[in-house]
Length: 210
Ligand code: GTP
Ligand code: MG
Image 1: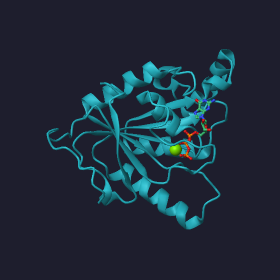
Image 2: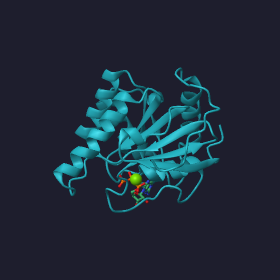
Image 3: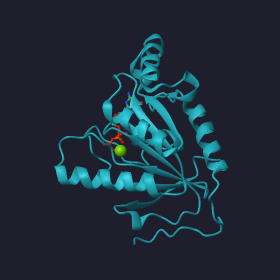
Image 4: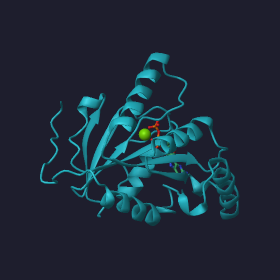
């Protein structure tokens, strides 16, 4: 799979706006400002395919990118951002929840956490919920460049313990240096290949707004 063959497809604000399920989805979830969009940019080898921001709450819709005509990458809105209205927060979370529960072609949820920070309740809850739903997920600890290798290992071990994970089940990553990039690409390519519910790939998704 060539992750650099990528194009923006659409932004969905409701489930009915999702593209046809002709190939697997890999979704990227995490707290607001954790580095989801930066991780996707690094994954596809672009500096600015996905808009990033130092202001939390930048991504507010499900943003679909189409890789190598074979895989959807889905940038999800961040959770845990307090400075939006309760109503906006609920509609975002409703959309993400419905999406994760109902999207049959969702092959993996990449759950992104900040390697510098202690385990957050919302991250733990998301992973517990994915386990309960039996959805494949891949924890990624990002912003590793901000720590020494020694500190990276210490923090990763603490997060692993909090999430009941072994070291080979997660990836330590940096969008800045590319640490963990090859492992991430390999793991995600494998998810794309094994997905069982694919229809004919000859049906190309429309890029028209719905
Ligand atoms: P929302 O869409 O608002 O939820 O944010 P996001 O999770 O998509 O985060 P985004 O990629 O926009 O990054 C937020 C900030 O963190 C930006 O200032 C990035 O430059 C920075 N950042 C992201 N990843 C890394 C990383 O691996 N290392 C460093 N040093 N900074 C990073
Ligand atoms: Mg974003």
